[in-house]
View 1 (cartoon, rainbow, N blue to C red):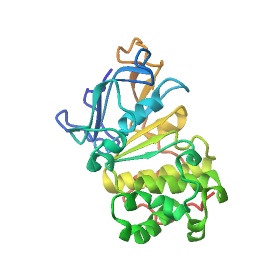
View 2: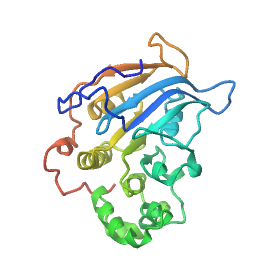
View 3: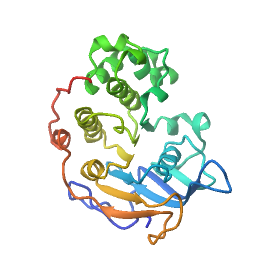
View 4: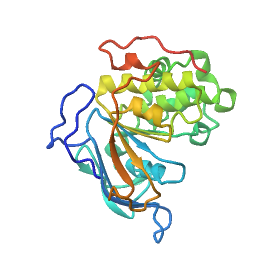
Length: 277
């Protein structure tokens, strides 16, 4: 199922069928060997302000699909559109306005962080890459507070902090350019419950303020069903199932707030953060 039917967001307002999606994948086939793709003919659409969960066991292809959505992996077939505009490149070949429209947080922060950079330099790295280094100090300090990083931690390097502290910095890095779409690929997979709740709350506060869309990938059904508006079940590694769309089956998520992040959907998000751990 492609998810084209009219849905409702958590505010109860129906999404208009003619609304341009924040992110759309149509007929995507992708993998690492053309003769044996990991995902086949997958279609999904995420509206502005909507949170969609992609559920599935390890090895089913959901992370590959997330990388395609983030313009980090070129598919063999199909299209990706961001805000109604078709992707015109992948990785560093993507136009800057498209590349910076999507923020990404991966499961293993130590594999996505330059070990030579301090946390302060890490979270402002995208600003410098876009020629906005003059804003780095101000925005870096603001985002550090937002994700719960003490100023003292900003001078440390990845090997001097915990996984949770480093993942907070990686989330801040994903948000620093104010993306319209956020892709969280197993973002909380290596974190304890309190840090998980804190980071989900950060994401929800950002979405509440910006109207950004979210694609959250993982296998923690309880967490994702509480966090997201819809869940998509990836039942097999690119094989056809009775859903008829590359292993994706649409399910309606119940409207249940995530413990520890309920305030993220209220009119006045608190300005306090959970201490980094």
